[in-house]
Image (cartoon, rainbow, N blue to C red; front, side):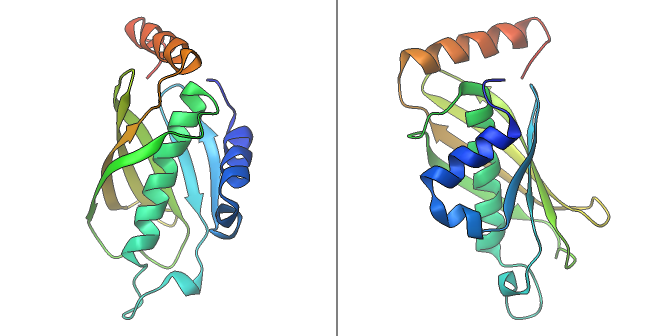
Length: 157
């Protein structure tokens, strides 16, 4: 891993000051996944008492960005190209945990799968798939080569 959970969290906060107010926290990064926690807040609810879709989409996007940063290092210009989300059930009023995993990591893009679960009962409340554009740089290219080598030997992604 190129960055720890704390380093990823600090990097996102420095580049996007509103992140500090979002209630998100990068909890864990491993060679296989990242986990981001979204703290429950009443102001995230929509009529009917359900957590809003945009809130869960932002959590999924944050988890995708976190796995890019943890794996490739501080690449501030990696951006979302596509985000598709399936809302599977109404989440209970509790923190949500988003776990992101690479489906494919290439030189210029990454396809990432995210499972969003309730912290109360671990139930799957949403699933997202997204594509991130990775700006070309020698550092990113070296990181992708390292990550691909680790995956080939069973030690990574």
